[in-house]
Image (cartoon, rainbow, N blue to C red):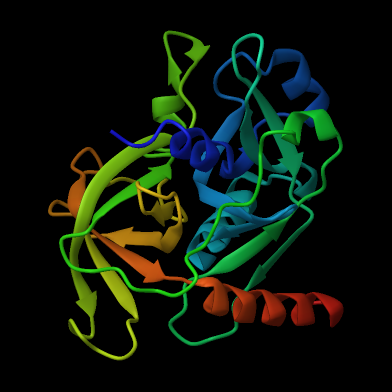
Length: 255
């Protein structure tokens, strides 16, 4: 069991990244009807209005946008809104800016949005990132994301769930155990399409130690077959701070 105080804190800070299949006014009118939000990947809050995800999630979103001729005004993030008195709801926020970490072999990007209804975000906050990276092989980890994209979020004509919890453990670190610098985490976690960009966290504290970025599929031709071998990008506060500094600089330059 994950601590009851840890679970909602992680879940509330995770969002789906995707696009509306209809203009926003129509989505607001019919948002309880499935099929109006297509999930491309997952992200999580690292600042009040900044979401961390994989660079390839942003690229995949742009590819789908071009293929389906989706206007920028229909690119959105979807958060599950906790409610003290009543069932949870959903709020979508327009994507206002997307950028990448300009470092070779770093599959990381950021998405910016604006908070228009502060009451929706009263219990949604940036996730805590570990002070210093130090995961060990066999360590228990959790992952919160959107496996199978939109497919798992809908059933019998109704919306359901939100981000889904997966649990597993660290199987290895790259380049090898005991190395001074770790560039990749190998996980024994069920990974599916849509989970890219999910936070990898310590169940005991909720501290984020990495970002789920890919998996190995044993049968590539059939997406019904998932994988229990996944890879993560390590992260700690210093690494995140450097990434954000570069991202903010690129934004100032107009990129």
